Image (cartoon, rainbow, N blue to C red; front, side):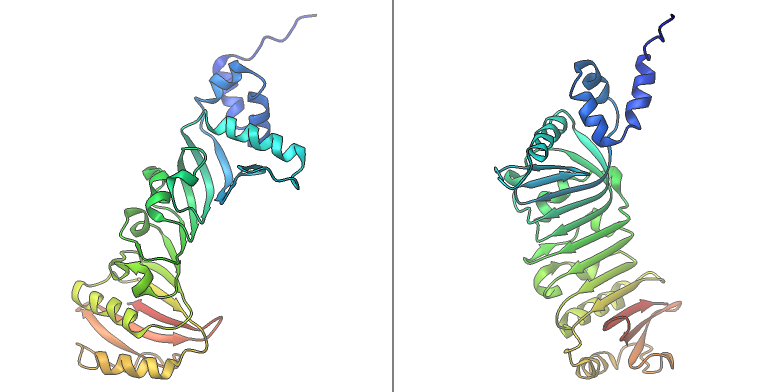
Length: 281
């Protein structure tokens, strides 16, 4: 009986690249030869997460501390994952999530990530962003939750197609937020800050803003929007092209001329949640 010849080196590379990550890690762990081939092939994962002592990649979980409630199989796979990652320099990930990452010492393995979507929660952007491969730009979605003042003047932020911030106050948390070049940005915070919104509008009046830009500022229903809007009217009633007449469908708002071909609409919507909208048309 004639034996089937073994796969050639190029054929093995092609096969390994499309093997499900879980199987790929297990397969290569058993062969030095496969490990050498594997290191020349890109790695694709759906999900990466780094939080406290836990690092996850798809279905694998590594914890830096002994956790008696983890099954032995989970612990074994975690060690296998770390061994696999330490032999690589970069990974392609659909979604990367960093939670509470404050220092470089908290990162158990040094990698570059090429990502489609990035989420950070209470993390230091100066630590997280250097791990993102510049070839990721523009990122499809970028979500940032902050609890400390942070400079958002980074190209990865400016170039993201969709950006959302969860902050207590724009002024206290986001440094340089009025300079954001993005066309679609969403802010989530508890109370609507008049000062923060005024800074954005004044910057746009002075420097202009691209038509199609829309900033959505979500806030608590407890905010006194009528008082907020009254302050806006008083602040901008002398601005060029100021008008209270926007659209009959909007409850309250005003418009300002930004240029000969564009104007800024400022108005409120209440569904699906309370939002102040800044829209350039």
